[in-house]
Image (cartoon, rainbow, N blue to C red):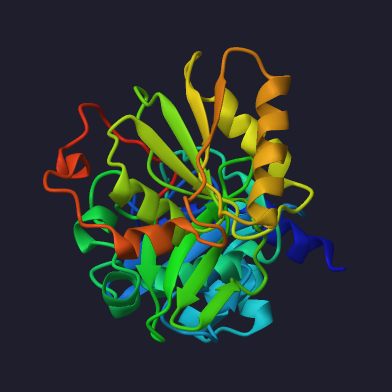
Length: 328
């Protein structure tokens, strides 16, 4: 390992270096563990890995990724020796003559795992949800629901027309996403299941857990509730998800209701029991089991047999401000 190169990778805030070249932070798409910056048509995601290195990738060019060394070389064509001379002023090495432009201080960038950058890049490449034949025509989930304030920004559509639902981990970092399409269910390569979720409002009084995002959208369409937030486990529980579930429940106001809107089968009932056990460990929350009326059904089966509500309350705006910890 070259100590000087390691210092460049860890000590130079890549966001500041990019800003010195004219890149501007996109606050709408950035969050505490990820900075999205733009310069003209170029759009890059900058993160900090657990080893302390700042890394980046271009949303539009698969080749354009790596550390600050790659960032400089890709944009200037410099060799490694020239890159060293360019970056030395940024770490205060004596004898450096190139001036460093003063850049405004930025909040510390939370560290994330090595695979998160690729997960986030694929998420960013997908388009914000506008329509989906799979979701609206096959599953009968209304587009107005998906684009309502409760769910806006939580779903995207990729080039294969898969619908993506973001998952966040216990630190509220984007850790992966569910993928669904006709005859296909998957999870992001390199990602890890956390909880798929809606946007949240401080005045919510109910949190609904389902086995997939299609299920919680179906449940929301069947039982419109402006005081409910929604979560998906994306199938079976992994070892980390109970702690994430516990944290999300504890973020609810005292007296809130925790709803297990599971499938009417053995797996759904097993998850409902696990959720009830978590609720019983905590104080001040009410557990409710809500299964479809017919054995073997999930809530989308019920939705496809039910009429659409005449006056969907999810179309009404929420009374308060932002409900997300990070952008999409």
